[in-house]
Length: 132
Image (tube, rainbow, N blue to C red):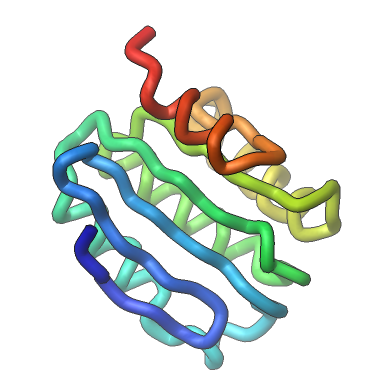
């Protein structure tokens, strides 16, 4: 796995062998000033993967996501870069999940249809690894 970058509330890495981006979110992701390179790191990670890549987004330690416009930009970037599937792992239903889900719907069905939420990392990885 290759580390791409990190900020106060996120970390992004890629696994070129699996053609997969890994993201981890922590704490209260409320201000763009706290994570100024987030979109740049996302674009860089996408650039290191081939179209058809998958994303494993670990949201277990995310307490609050209050930037729907940023979430929408990231999701549009993934879609434009050729993402095949996005698996998000959540510890429980939360307001943050509603923000992310709402942003995905605004990006459009072509993105929203590639997403699925899970309660465990193992289930998420199994879904991403499927070849159907």
